[in-house]
Image (cartoon, rainbow, N blue to C red; front, side):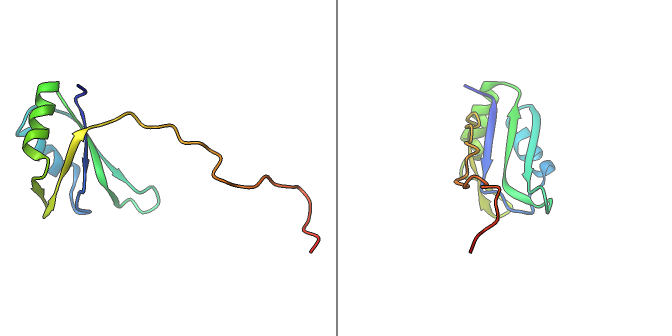
Length: 101
């Protein structure tokens, strides 16, 4: 098992300190990363929490998955590796010329 956890369905008011406090009740918290929007700085509603050991991570999942934090039921599970995204995006190649219409 991996000791890095995905935490979803967060309230936009939840802070990294709130998450640290909630997860530290179940073991040593190594790192908390609250994901924020680049342009606004506002929370994106999810975070990653790294626990000290796999056993502590499992204890946090067992205790906090479905538990309420800031009025919202948390989704807590083992973080999966990020999937590569294609950079195609469906854009058409630039023709380099002017439109003739």
